[in-house]
Length: 222
Image (tube, rainbow, N blue to C red; front, side, top):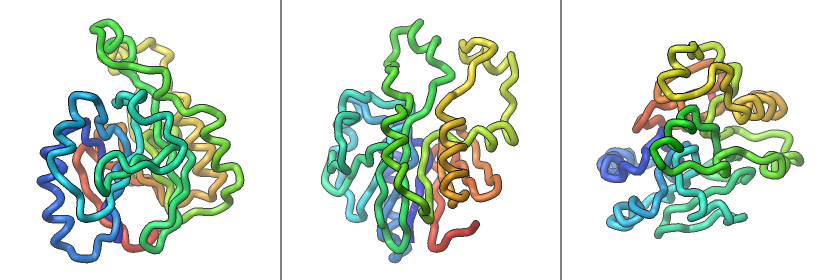
């Protein structure tokens, strides 16, 4: 069985409070986190306070310090039993074949730049990173940070008021979400777990996890 966790934003104290419940189930063989892990120079020390007795895999979202890990081309153990999974990776975990594609665009980019907060163009998924999955025809699960654009359109209001609240232009959209939609379709709509939107949503075979939400997966549900 897999445990899948939503955005953490560097709140590793919350993560460590989750682990005893996950461990108590007795059948979880791997934990996957769907991005906005919150991997920054000032949060790494909190991460290092504890160890993982269940393998923990995380992808990047749009709130990370990318220079710390984005150069890794292979799954990399950044802390004992805690692994960064690069964009375009395919792993076999438990009984599932899983594709991973981190990254997302920041609706609050302008706000973060205005207040000298951490932001990097590296948050966006490159064509080369998507191309790593070109030879993959089928997976059981797709793990992304941003949801597919069609799921966003079905469930979220991209109103001018909302865009203004985050300092975004009225025509803003996340190009990564359109690419994830195309990838999801090409892989024949596998079960997709993602985060980014800070709300819990199920739309077809896509499950958006809220902040700190945990779901357990022992079979595909498409």
